[in-house]
Image: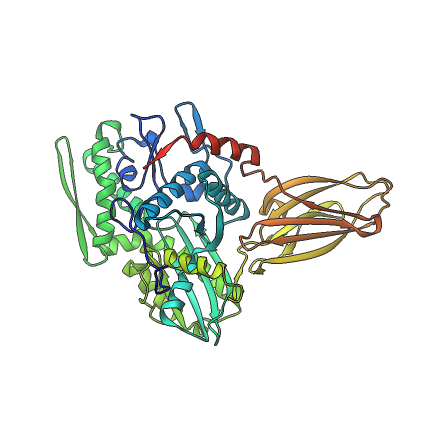
Length: 480
């Protein structure tokens, strides 16, 4: 935030306002990690040393990379990106940064949000706030336009994820999110891959050559860059060409805008279904949406913008930079975090519940419904099943369905009950979501004077000891 109270973008060491979230393990140095454009440029030449798209793996119990005898989780990879951005910002500002605000896709689950919080801890920076990306973009727009009493839809299609959020800004410029939804594995990177697949199939069909073979690795590296450039060119031109030179092969492959639009139409249709669900959850009809904001670079592809306009029945606003709006909104949010009078209401992106037994079957029992305002605490009443029951096995779930197999199990733990607990003793289970949408659990048996807070050990996340261990190890790494 500058001296006038306006958000500004800090440039990185390359002089750019955008830093690709790509990590390169430098083979010439065991303890140097390269993040950003230089890492992205090495993605094809040294694929075994490059990690990208880490956001899509946050909250998954997965080893993203094994390198030099060490295993790297999504949290560890993400911590390198955080360190890079903070270091470049400190150099740009000429001052130390004490903490971070991190934006996340609105659809992010509890495990993904916890992994994001852990990544900040591993990087060594306190998490001051976590905000949904579409909501951050709306904060930027509202600050710029000073709008009031409007319903706004944010259509956020970025490099690899999609979010849609509907919110209302009242007469006092207070913002309330009404609903949110989203998709993983949707966006610009997948559009690039459509072009790459088209060129690969063309070469294989016409020349019986697979350019994904190792001997053509340089050609494939150029193709990744050319595909991204072609996607951008097709926003302003009806056709573009990709040149392929491999051995005796000399091809100029033409791709039309019509072909490209056909390639990406299925992805758009998936986003349209999510818009319909968000409208239903918000209790609004299309005609009640006053403005549509396009966020994320992929949202400005003419086909996407035109389809969104046709769906909602009004031309999307072009008043904000789709690549910068989220970051600018995060800066505004950081300012609001210290203002106790600022009213800002967001909602949870998934339902939270517990598994219960009804008759002889297990069911998912929702305690906090999707799109509840956060922070939130909701308590429900249950009963023990037998005399002298020793424990309750509590399974916490995430999802909107009744069948246990159709929802995600976040964590399981055992609650040991007091001695001589009779059957049908009242059990009060209170689940809370904090401002980061992280889960907190409180259990009470009032008749037995039993009451405890529980901290979940999430199956998909690193535990506290592992976080401390890797934090110490990674501090010795140089990030550039």
